[in-house]
Figure 1 (cartoon, rainbow, N blue to C red):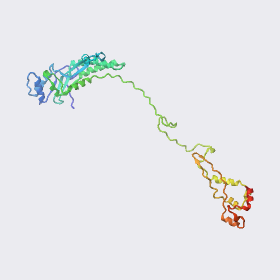
Figure 2: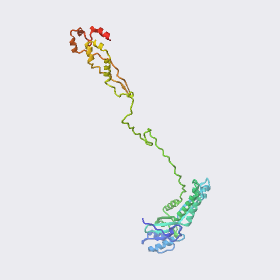
Figure 3: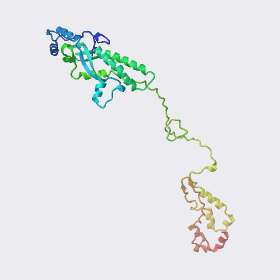
Figure 4: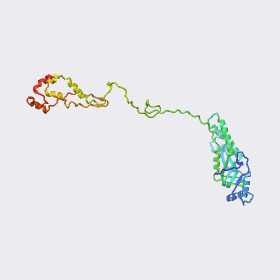
Length: 358
C-alpha cells in the first residue's frame, strides 16, 4: 500500500488553508452532479481542471464546515450532577451536546479515492474542556491514591490535547455526496458512528502503577513414602541395594531355611550306640542280624510342618523290628519256633529272656 501524504494543513496546530484536490483526467459523473447542485453561481464544468478549481473554491469557504458527529456528554463531574426522579429533568440539566465539526484538507480521487477531515479549533477546545473539567475529575475520584497520581493526570491531559489536534478522519470520497450549499455538509451512510468511536477512543483511562512483585515462596513437594535414603524433593523411592557380604550373625541365631533330612538317621545311630552290647548278644540271631542290617523303614521320618516363619524339629521314633526273611527261616528248621513263628521271628520258647531285657 503506498504511503499517503497529507498536506501541511493537516498537521497538528496548523492553521486552516485551502485543501489539496487531485482528480483523474476523466471526472466521475457523481462529482459533477454534486458541484452543480451546491454552487449558486453557474460555473463551467467541462474539464478536470475546471472541476478542481470549483471544488477547491467551494471547500475553502469559511462556511464549509462539516458535522462529523454529535456527542452527548455530562456538564459536570458525577458528584455535582443533579439528582431527580424524572429522567427528562436530569437529561436537561446534567447533559450537553457537542457537535464535532471539521473541514476538508485533502481530496484524492486518483490513488486512495478518499477525503480527509480535520477538526475545527472550536471542536478541539470543547473536547479539551470536557476532558479537563469533567472526565479527569471523575477518573481521579474513581482511582485509588498514590504518590504520582497528579503528575500522571496532568500527563494524561497533555496527551489528549496532542491527540485531538492530530486527529484526522479519512473516509471514502463518496462522502462528498453529502455536501450542501456553500460547501457545508454532514457524513452519511453511518460514517458518523465511526467518527464517534474514534473520538471516544481518545479518552484514555488513568492507570495506576502496577503493584510491586510479590515474592512467591516455593513449596517443595513432600514424598508420599518418606525414605531417609532419598534426596529431598524427589517423588520416587529408590530400591535398597543389598550388600553382597552380609553382616556376621551369631550361629545360635541362624534359623535353617530347610529341614535337614539326615537328622533322623543320625539320631537313630546315636540311639543304637547307647544300647548295651550284652543285651544285644543275648538276643536272637534274627535280632542281631536286624542290628547289623538297618531297616529300610528306619530312614523314613515324618515330614516337617512349616507355617510361615515357624517350623517343628523332627520327632525321634522307635525303630520298627524288621520282618524275618524267608532265607533266615530255612536255617532253623529243627527249632520249635520255626513252626510257630508268626510274629517276625519272635521265639516263644525264649520269652523269659526278652522280658528280663526289657
